[in-house]
Length: 291
Image (cartoon, rainbow, N blue to C red; front, top):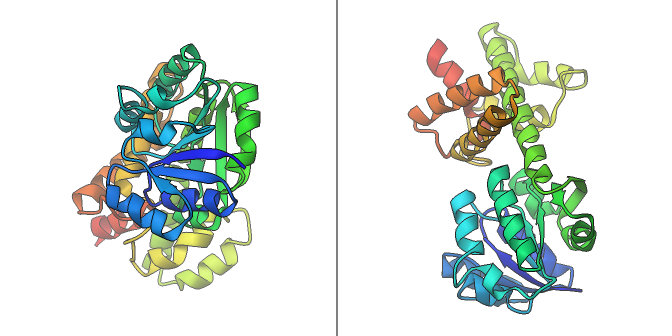
């Protein structure tokens, strides 16, 4: 069992930290909103810290699950950042979806300080976090990953090192690129079924068993048909992620025409007031356009 600091108790981080505590690890949590940390310690064995540096002090692993590049920099750097509280040899495992640039930047700073750094973005949604069934895609040095993998296993159904620093974030970009196209395709299929006067549930029952089947279809078609989106991975977050994808594509020369188009479709959803709706709300845009 390990001494672990977990920073960021959002919809993903809160249950992930809980799985670590349930597995028997000694967990200290930090959250910008202290009330959330107090709630967590009331439900799980563990302690709460008042600063990132305090949380990281004495920890063997520091796990972060935050919002964006700026959040991650703020938590890692500065007099109260985790880097100032981590002992040499400690490993930081970052589960935030951020740019590959900030990952490489912080990985270099960690190396200078004698720390390990594993970029480990996650996929599986809130349900995956709550059920300990996340897919974790990792980048970083082989030894750091090998030490971190048994700890990550507390909330992962799949964990794999893809390559060096930044490879985990690049893989998460592939994940979001694939999802964007899938959700738009599913939205169009269900919208077409509605316009054709078909029973959408019957349609999905058939086509989900063939080549069209996907996680999105299995887990989102019913709420899409019912026009319910007050849950799940928010459109605002998806646009942040797709912006990272498109920015990296500018750097490496990849062509992402569908991703760029779907990003603009999500912008339309935001204009409809759906910034916090689930990403499957793309179908509502079609309903609004078509009438």
